[in-house]
Length: 472
Image 1 (cartoon, rainbow, N blue to C red):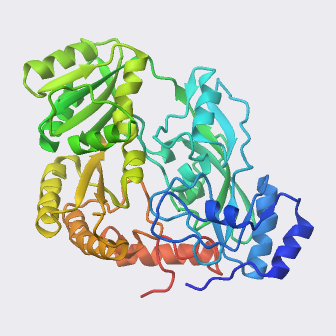
Image 2 (cartoon, rainbow, N blue to C red):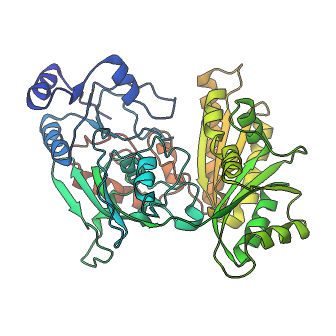
Image 3 (tube, rainbow, N blue to C red):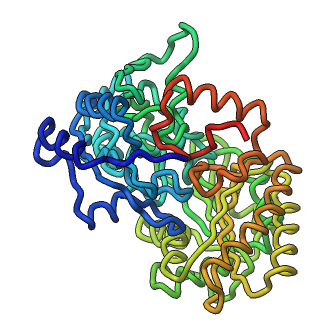
């Protein structure tokens, strides 16, 4: 794709028309704001801008559109698909300074926040009134609300609350041409045609810049029980999931799967300690909220042990122990990133098809690349599994990525055969773009391009991400 970087005359104009902290071009700033959590593409933006409001974003985007500057919207940069990477001279538009937290309306159970508000800060802000925005993930301390919305983030409680789009009532969006859209406000009901709000949710910054949101809240969950249960593998984990779904007396808040290899990598980096003396091939972490009907979580746990659905288990007896058990799951990604260079996939399938899919995948990897380290974990309660492959030390980065891309062809053929998705929650960005056709039809991709051309006629907003704009 063609990039139009910020020229010297453009820098001078921004310095004259905006405040002194708006434009940054220091090498350290370009390096920091030009990348996300992926390590495949080298960041190379021409500048970073830091607007303070929707109005400043609109002024800047109108100017960028007229001058032809390519712009990459940027939030907390915790993405894993290269969606926030600026590697072709683009201008990064950071929402870091748009962090306002509005007054919580405890009657309507809503709050207005800026796109740059950190997820954990929103949780703390609303928690004081016994309310929460129930999108929860390991990166909550770094991710921004705008980024969560732009990628339709999932997280650890999707099995209970669903995806981000379920918890966004209204959006403030600036189009590529600098027009401000105020979409839906705080309305629960608004049956007046196409819901443009949903068009921007999950669009990865390719259609507009999200600058603010009205978030729908819910009550903070009551006391929960957290347990880690040892199982023989994914098939056993899904039998356990079926049992939890059929039980009464509790709400299933989270159902997370991880292999022993994941536990080992977390332990090796001192991020958590396994509570088991006798190790197992895999584990399930469950979080259960008693709801006052039936026999509750304790009775179900007794049942699964009695039926032999698990071989061992640890039930947290305090908040501290609950956090220690959660650390086994939440620190996997960070521990893996410290251990070496990774190739990541994040797929979703119908829950019942996961065991067959994973069995086929492991067979392919063992046959083709027996020296690859494979780490599987994920939110299997909603059909989502994360596949992490560690580069062997003896392999070059280039050879490793080439091998992984070949394996991805086989992997995504499997995903397509099982009517799954090549990206459950990480999005497409740059890294998954070549494979989007495994989950989307040519007709759908052409509609994507038409929508893009309508909202961004010059193709300057997060260019090259998700799909190529020219028909192949």
